[in-house]
Length: 279
Image (cartoon, rainbow, N blue to C red; front, side, top):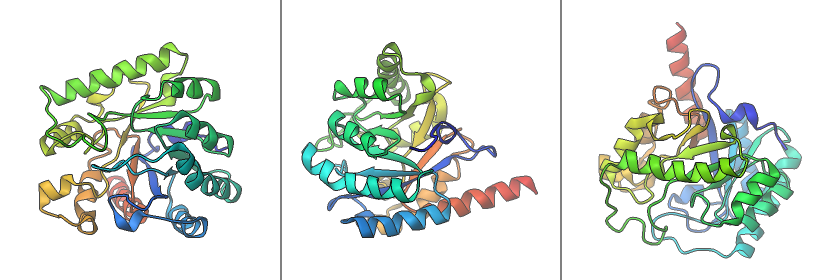
């Protein structure tokens, strides 16, 4: 397993670590991110690593709006060969697993994964024991509802306050179980039970949604539907410029990790911004 501790916080220049998305699914919202076998995934992962990625986030179940759930056995079947192959070839890369299920998390950690990215924020109560016993990091994301219904007219009073409060409740469950704050990332869940105005408020708030200063902040905005609402880009293929525009604000919002489909473009963005700041 990799030494995940330095990968949980921002780089020395203040820019976020980059997490590349590997969807081992037939139905993820961005068609170009769908991968179907070990060879194809390894080729994509190798390119991400060459481009400078810090984390690889592997998912075997789509959680796009309207997605149908996948059972644990199918999820495990999809992701375990990928994790084994990646860990063998790249012993130092951070490997995150995007799953809502404790049994999938355990199986992934057994073959070399480093972190669990739980978009349901502990909906499986056994997940707490997994994180505690394995002493691994976890990302908890705010989601209003479930993937199959989360975009059905979500409503908030004060979205930043409500998301922070709900994340705080989940963080307390983890810390009460002995999980250290530095093992925890919070994700405001852009596009997960939110309308455009909610997404913009949460992004603008930056670390204002994080309940403990010792924990990290993760953003996942890559090519999401918010760019259809904001820019009129209905096709996910046309959303890279909008994605990079938001990513350019990540340093000023003290984001620790940014989860993206387009690793090379984000690496170039942060390098160019850093060079200009240093000149």
